[in-house]
Image (cartoon, rainbow, N blue to C red; front, side):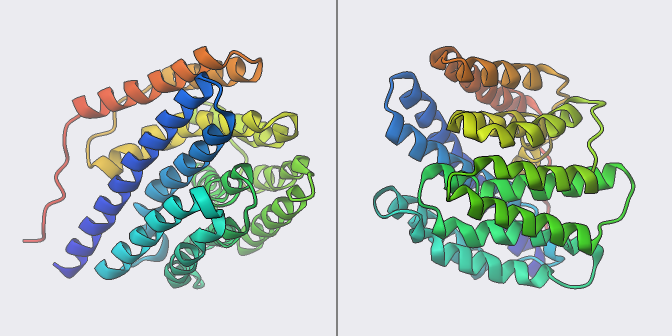
Length: 308
């Protein structure tokens, strides 16, 4: 029963972050459409941080083989809300307490089990978040590290291979070095962890997720062409990985049977935004979110029942 109650709190904390991310991302899309660039970038970064908090926290019990204590879940959530509010005025250093507590929780998953190895990639992203000087660098901290972690986990598993300590450590190191190089304007450096990820966990583009996984690795390295090359790359991987596979687990509903519609819409939004057609791209992103929400609402609830 104690474990059940702790997991229920993990679910509700993840839902809160998910709903917060929807608010920020919708606001960011609206501000982009009306030309409010500065606040648009800030809200986009906040939306990505909240979204990946939701996606990664719902999986934390599996990542560390333990459910966080209920007080720890709500302390972490409160610190995230504080960081989100304060960062709008005082910068991303406001997330330092959140990052410290989250890293402490991940410390439970730094043992010798191979399933713990991918956690090595997430932790640098959390550590770098409070050091982020701009919204783009914040998006390239915890959110990007989360994507690399998930792609490594999923593509190694799809290949029926084993997680390797050396591969996970190399990916974590190259990611951290790429982030540091980006502070000096070398955004191309994210090609290096993408290459390392592809060598360690080759994608198989046999379905929408596989195509999105392959696309993201290349697209994130195009950030030097403009910050929206990075932001819209997140839109593609969120549509092909997080929405189909993790949104149902946060909402505790059966997963809808998506085909290629989310991939096609997100790729179209990526192209439209990066050729300067902001309004139709924003409309497409809003449409993706609305479509996913509608499909989720129509899917069958799966109650999280207490132990008998």
